[in-house]
Length: 267
Image 1 (cartoon, helix red, strand yellow):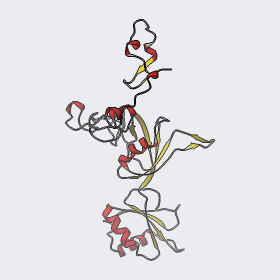
Image 2 (cartoon, one colour):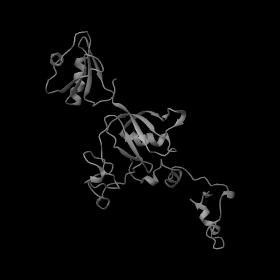
Image 3 (cartoon, rainbow, N blue to C red):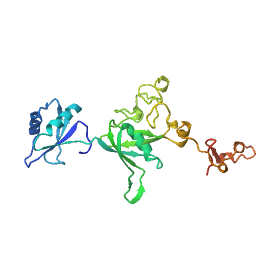
Image 4 (cartoon, one colour):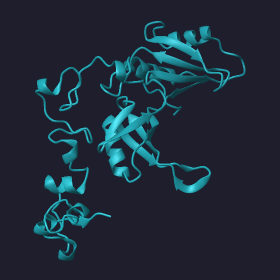
């Protein structure tokens, strides 16, 4: 398949040495029963692909499917649908964020078929922190996205520019006129007006907040019953009364109490 374009566009390549002009392309389209105009609304020559290559845009997905079917029987014409998948670049995520979290976050927008972490050209073997994910898109991805509490910046060819606050096109966040609910993540109402279910902005599922997402952290997975807590050895714990002992006011700030199972000294 050719590189990604609008899903209603296909590439037509005519064989032969003689130059093909648009009038001839229209004639071929009409000869197989396509309505021009009607089912086809745009034609563009693609000289970088070849002298006789054209992009044809259909007015609907149904028209494109029918057009591809009937044009494939035309002698001397090659019909190439454009690939629906695209490499998505993900920026500004922490280095320790796992591949599984990135794939799960972007998987809400289509089927993930590839993943890679680019390396510096000047120093092979050292990663840049950027992630690239190949996705068969079923919907466009906003230019900013939350992943496990971190805001990532998303970019890919053909991506519409969206407001990071409401996710809609046509304006910047600083001029955003839309209300967006922090509970259900929908546009059009505020938290106080919300009657919907809680939606996690990490995994996109309903029923829990991002900080309690079962896929997010060990502590959240324990809290939601996904896994059982594993007690640490007694030598790694400190009694509660020692942590709050008035006889040793300098000890408490040096220790962190995450749960009855895990108490670790801070550096």
